[in-house]
Image 1 (cartoon, rainbow, N blue to C red):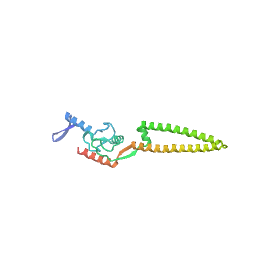
Image 2 (cartoon, helix red, strand yellow):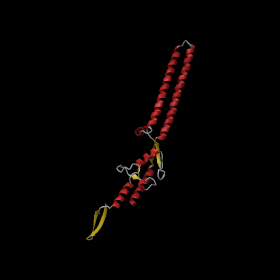
Image 3 (cartoon, rainbow, N blue to C red):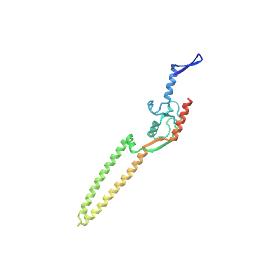
Image 4 (cartoon, rainbow, N blue to C red):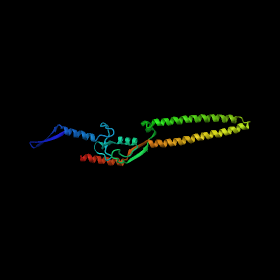
Length: 205
């Protein structure tokens, strides 16, 4: 509401006057100017900041919205003005990953293939171990003892290959998981600097 100022008997009387169409339009534009360009949620209990060189309706975002967008897009710069943000990256924890369900479909496929392969390998190892015990049970037959030793070597070799494969596969999977499941956070000094600039700009307006 605009305020009208009148003088009556050397006293200043302030009365409220309705907004005209142009003033109402300007007021709505100012409200939209401070809306987050990512979520457009005016009811969100979070202040907006202007972290890049964008102006107008694209100049303000919520911190959480921007950090989520940077994490999903695997980027560290604005997609409009290409301003490079000062960010800090860290991998998601298992709990955070399960909560956000990132890349769950691909992970489930890899886990199913690995589990199927391990079960088959364990079945083969069990068969080799039973055959080794059967050969070694015939202590009077030298050929059976030799066959038992050969089967034991094969069994231990297959077991070693299984553990080696599991270690290599798990380490590679974990590295890829860390690479594609990063959390991007804006640097605290960068945040404080932009908040102070936003306060100054609002005061000037």
